[in-house]
Every structure is written in C-alpha cells, then in structure tokens.
Length: 408
Image (cartoon, rainbow, N blue to C red):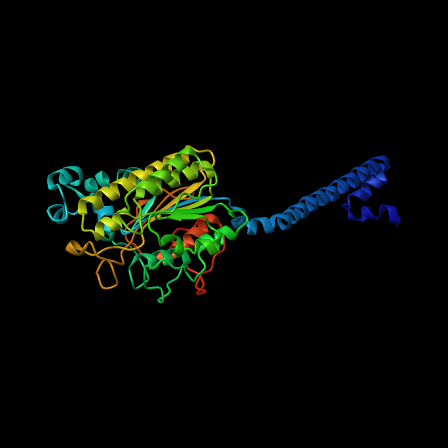
C-alpha cells in the first residue's frame, strides 16, 4: 500500500504496475513528471480564477460609472427659436398667392424674383439656404405635413408665451393663456440644467421679445437673460457688445416690447465666443411681428435673414475650440399660423396654428435629412430632448415623464 505522500499514484493508469516491476527509476521519473503536470494544472486553474475574479471586481468597481454615464456628459447646446415661422415656408418656400398680393408685398416683381422658383424644393432652398444645404444634409428636420411629418403644440392657445412655456417646462398648463411678461409658475429644463454642477452658471439667454425670459422665470432660476431693449448680460464686456448696447439704446422702438433680431444675433454670437456658456437659448422674433403686420415680403426677408444668422452662429461655434465637435443645435418654433389669407393669424380657433417643426444639427445627431411619415410629436417633448442632450434628469411639474423626440 502506498503511503500518504504518494496517494496521487492511485490516479495513474494500471499499466504503472508493470513499470514498477520492470523499472523503478522510470516509474519514479513518471511520477515526478505527473506530479509536475498536476501542479501546472492547479496553477492554470488558479490563474484563470484570478483573472475571472479580477474581471468581476472590475465590473463592480466601474458599474456605478457605467450606470451614471449620463451624468458624466459635458455637452454644449445652442437652442434657437424662430417665433411664428410657418412650416409652409420652411418646407415649400414662398406661397404664390401671397406673393401676388399687392397689399401684403411692397414690390411684387422684386420679391418674386428673389423668392419664387418653380418647385417647392427650389423655393425653400432659396429662402433658407443654410437650412437645406447644411442642416438637411448633416442633421434632421421634422414637420413637413405635405409628407405626413407632424409636429405640433399641445397647448390650446397656439400663441407665444404658452408655446415657450410648453417647450421649456415639458407640460401644458391650461391656466397659462396670455402673453404677459410674468414669471412662469413652473420649473423648466434650463433651470434644471443650471442646478447641475456641470452647467451651473453656464446657462444664458438672449431674446428679441420681452416675455421670453419670463417663460423660463430666469431671475428665480439664476439664468442671465436679456430681452427687448435690455442691455447685454455678458461677463466679458467687449467693445463690440458696448457698441451694440449704444445702438440698441439709440434705435427708434418700432415695436414696443421687441427689438429687431439683428440685435439678438449680435449679442448672442459675441457672448458665445467670449463667455463660452455651455447652454444658450437664442429667441428670434422678426417673422412673427412682420406676419402680424401682414407684410409678407418682410416676413420672407425675416426667414431668410434668420437662416443666415443661424449659419453664422453655427460656423462661429464650430470654429471655436470650446464648441467644435461638442455642440448640438436645436432649432424650432413656438406655434404655427393660419392657412392662405389667414396666414397672419394664430390662435386656438385658427386652423394650422398648432403646426410646428424641429431641426437638429451637430453632436449626437444622425444625418437623417427630412424625415417623412412620422409623428405626431409635440413641443412639450422638447424639454425631454434638451435633458437628453445635456445628460440631466428633468421631470415636469405635472409628473409626466415624456420621451425625447430624439434620444441622445
């Protein structure tokens, strides 16, 4: 019987007995080799166990980081709204019946020469070249009802303040029915962004119309904002900003509560390039004002000019190291307008006033172009879309969590 030291011999094949009889030295060598092989197997098992355990430990160590990857996002976002710009002009260009109306167009021949082309695709491109030559090729556009792409407001009023409230708070409050410059009672997504350590003190807003900053209750939210005839709110006061302040102060106030979009553009682009906010809302308003005045040629000029402003903002940011390749651009409107000769009006009783649109460009946006056969999407989903872009948690005051229009 073998002693305890050599018990492992019981695992050797029976032929070993013959070796023991014939050649003890050969057997001893065989035992040594088998013992060495057994140790190698044990070492291999231990090594495999070590690496397996290491993988498990690493997963548990990094799991919180993986789960909170949303919270590690450090995004840049430029939100641009164009008050009251109809989907019809965005997707089909100038409307012929309105171009021919001498009461609504000063110079029919010049306006037709500038904006009329034989096809909707040509008309929209000549009206908004940046939109159709860049955004449509590098980003996505929603809202062409002629191609069953539907986006609209959920509020019943179809006017501006409730529209901005809906898109920023992510909900509809039926008690909000007017355009008065009063603080919104509800928390908004920009307020949530400004509460996040990644964006704290880096959220700003410029707007042409007075009531826009009240829609995000900017003072309560701690968000610097300048609207109407207020001076700029930049931290770095450049000579350009000081000059624009003087120009604005010296301009005749054509509209009581709104300045021309050129001032909003100048303030915004100069502040973006010098203060480097991470989130900026730029709210343009010329189109809505000219529409209410039934000046269709000015309305078209406003759309064309705003498209150029957006191009400049995009190009300036993408040529700036702070924004280049890190910035998403979200462009939309607050409400639609009436059809045909009712184009100047918008309210809950005017057909077409609910219809809106959305464009996305930049980081995280797939080049999907004009999206057809989709929706309806709602402007109240824009808040969730903003939250997704910034990687923040936001729940509207009504407790309803909506899906983003595009998930980032």
